[in-house]
Amino acid sequence: MRIKSIQTGRIQIPLKTPFKTALRTVEAVEDVIVRVETDTGEEGFGEAPPTAVITGDILESIEGAVRNFIAPSLEGMEIEDLDGIMKRLHGCVKGNTSAKAAVDMAVYDLYAKSLGRPLYRILGGARTELETDLTISVNPIPQMVEDSLRAVEEGFSILKIKVGKEGYQDVERIREIRQAVGPDKVIRVDANQGWTAKESVRMIQKMEDLDLDIDLVEQPVPAQDLEGMKFVTSHVNTRILADESVFSPRQAIRVIQEQAADMINIKLMKTGGIHEALKIVNIAEIYGIECMIGCMLESKIAVSAAAHLAAAKSVITAVDLDGPSLCREDPYEGGPLYAGAKIIMPKEAGIGISKVPVSFR
Ligand code: MG
Image (cartoon, rainbow, N blue to C red; front, side, top):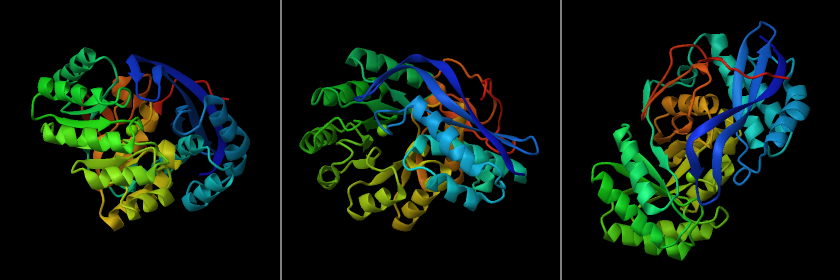
């Protein structure tokens, strides 16, 4: 089974409500879809969102990297030669982690299809079901309380609250949400780099004093400020999760060795796909730290690739794969089932997605 062609297309899916973080506001998913076709007529699918403020990738750069660099490097290669494909994929162009992730997952899709098994089984996994959190966007407090209550009603028992836009007001925000949802729901907080180190310590300690029972705080300080994140991690009891600070396996090692965070958020768009994400998984296993699996604003193809990785690796203890839950419609057929907070892994071979209504060129 050889790679015959690698093509791209675009998909646009409206969101149920605008997605707002300390970094951006987005109304719809508009992503690049990649199709890898083999000489035997099999298709593998991948997806990459243009997360300019985090990865630096935009729609045109993703398409350009796939068409002009990655496709000519990989066409003609044997799918069985996964190691060789990954070497070329990561060697043919620098950066461009989202484009690489889209092609990487399409290749893994085909690799698992060639073996006739679901991808998570090929990766060694046995978990058939995952529970994801749901993201609550940054808004005025009453709306965030309402959104949190609706999420609970829809069956989500883990909420990820976006903060970081209004400094100390964020403590009040979390206090009101905790009061509304009650003591038994899990609350995670994501500041998306919106606080300084000192603000973070003061606010997290305040939340601890108020017994708000926060599961973890994600990326409180700017990505480059490892000193600051270490300061936060060492001054609070709450777990600190590194997101924007860790893209590569090398950065994961550095954050862990410097004890700058307690956990690492793995996203395929940061690592450049499953092959590199597996290295972070292995590093976390070696050092004995837990990981979250996260996603950008992605629809079901990319999120499902991440779900297969999570289902395969027990070191991934927190699942933040709510992309499909935020989309107003599901244009694809097959793949994991997203039923409220539950993600049920598919029995089909590969990632499982069979129908992708996109025109490729
Ligand atoms: Mg985050």
